Amino acid sequence: MKRLILTSSSGGQLARSGLAELVISSSFHFEWGPLPSPEKLAAYFAARSANLGPGDHWSDWGIRWPKGIKDRKDLSLADFCERYDVVELWFDPAPRDQLQLVCLLDHLSSCSSLVPKLRLRLVSSELTTAHGEDLAASEPHIHVVPVRAQEFETARLAWSAYRAMTPEACVVLHQDLSALLMLRPALLDLLAELPSPFTGLGATEMRFLELLARGFANTNALFHLRSQRRTYVFGEFELGSLLEGLALGPKPVVAGLGDELRTIDRENLRARHEVYLRSRLSLTEFGRAVLAHQEDFSRHNPIDRWWGGTHLTNDRLWRYGNVLTKP
Image (cartoon, rainbow, N blue to C red; front, side):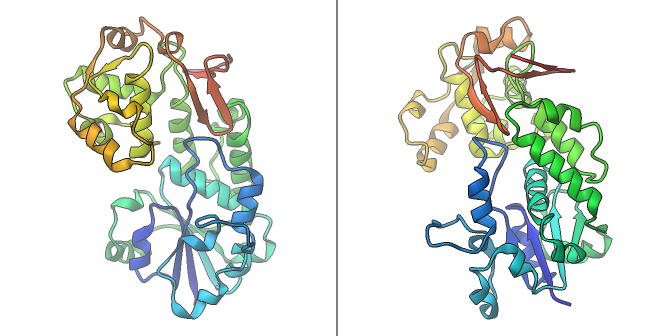
């Protein structure tokens, strides 16, 4: 039986597990920045066209391509999957993975001939922490379910809601996502990253302030002590951007971050990382007031970021606490 695995960027170790002839990962990260256009997504999944750049086609992300199938790399993803008996979806509970899963299911829902081949693995822990041999050993114990109409419909609704220009549909939707068991916790984590009604900051930004108040003074702690931070939406690149927003604005809540970050090119990751490592951080007086819910960060600093299809700015600052608050 020929098996293909579709996974996220977290699933690189699946290629070493021997569980499938080929493992293909997704290149998109939907939790930061503007979402790709429908046209870009359609071109990504379609047969390769001449105007696509490196990384713009699904086949650019195949892991360890066997020699005998490289000639099929220009096919659409659906046509490529047709050659397999089983197509398994391995996506872990992290918000990044779950967003990639609903996007993929939304696309595959229109490929009727593939539906009988699709299987969803209910992966309960993060794939990035697993080794290939461990995944192979645990595979018989990872529950697998066929992808049916309920899963497709839930994915369609979730992906449509997340792409909307406001977060209202996501707030309504999160109450019933039982067809995709890992999706509701992921969506709640994402909603928590909307600005707070009291502070104007999301969950990760507030955790940064809490850790600094407890004496953690370097970026390694903020970025990598996940059990202390207790937020799981963003990767290191996005965490750096959030920290810079807290420290380099007109009225910072964080002191001690290297001011040279203002002029270092954002693509120069090594130089930026060196600045992060030598910075010693602390809360400003304003930061302590924000942490105590006595001040609102957004009243003194510019806000310009994306939450799914919602562009958050000072004038369009959707806030989320127990309920969603309109701008």
